[in-house]
Length: 302
Image (cartoon, rainbow, N blue to C red; front, side, top):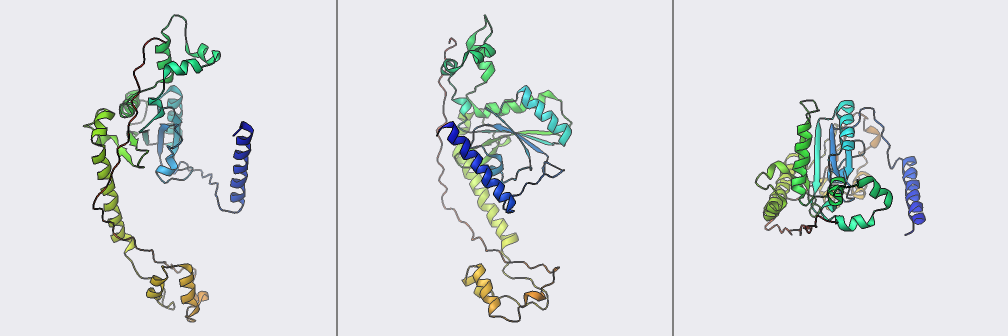
């Protein structure tokens, strides 16, 4: 795809977005009290790390800062300080991820790709070019160590109010799980973590099963509709047979003339039954262990 084709595709997609806004299929909510949650994520620019999708958030819910390898740089710190002091952010989350592209950078190859203008920005006369490349691009080999280093650096800065919490999480791009690094205290490096990877993911999967059971018991187990006096009770067997489809409800209404929609007061809360989620039993959870890319040691001369 040429640059021109890509530009046309993006602008055409924006046209579709604008049409959805006009049709009320998409909303642009410029609330005064944003973000909705006092949370800021510093995460990686890798495109599959989509904060809004991973945490099921909406635009405007949180602040998201991205760069290569979720590194705390001066520019990131500038943005964080604005978020903390101007928007009352209380949680700063460093979110790294498995298979990070920053672990795969080959500085020797990258040096050959740089244009003279970039070289002039990075290299200073008389200095070791390898060290300068490393200092500028900040590649790393261990995503877990990197998360912990960024958290500690931010905590050591001590430039935030005492009620600001700084934590680190690890996103598993293979399963979609977010793993709390404070639960990995016995895993100081990614190699140690990968040895117990299956156990971690299995525990998280079992937590999911438990949460579904709890949700079913507390919220979804209700099997009746609540109406005011003049509203008849819905034939649940009929709805059950039709899987609570819109057609089933219409069929019931058509065959029950006493159900008069005009009798429904606007203040009446009509609760439609939710389909029960069956209990999930997992006799065996299979977990595939991803191959963590190990970057080859590079020579100190370029």
